[in-house]
Image (cartoon, rainbow, N blue to C red; front, top):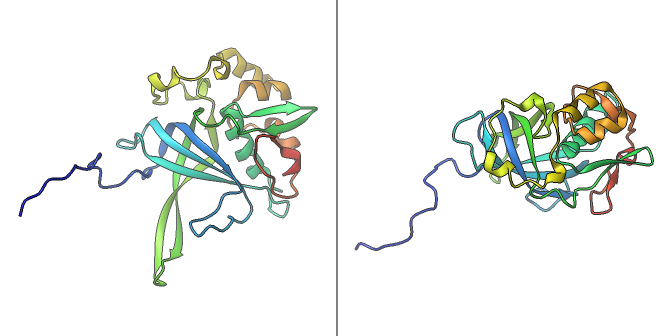
Length: 227
């Protein structure tokens, strides 16, 4: 017997999750402090999870795909004494205008993060896990390449694909001029924050932070010296 029903909104068989590595222009859907896994348990040593959606990018067929990035607290026991973890946190937050310097300390505040945009480079990182039947499976999850995250106006990403219509929706206060990024290269801590360079390959102000323990991320802000 024939019957009718509404068709799916999309005929993409891969679903709505990001599948390909690439350089992406993304929008922040939200930032969650003290993130949990699918079982509701806190993710060990995680400071926050950023939920993102692709606006444009170098990999075809990934527009509107979504993915999460989890940022972990620095560990002084690591060979780099937590430097890379601090950089990932700082440059992501700075690229979306959620970082500041207060009384000589670096502070993050994600209360206005939703709707902000950034450009970042993603690789697919392989990880193994066991399903509910105990069978070993392999997952490929999006991961930030080093600290390759940039403010949308950074000249370093001038040639990256971007959604012009989406960019036009950003508040004027979070847009930057090219000369501001030149100030960053000149090398003052204040300029690093103002410019929102978002390129982890330049140490910048993040090197002044020290790591002790995870910190909460909320409306009151996070002092990176507390991480």
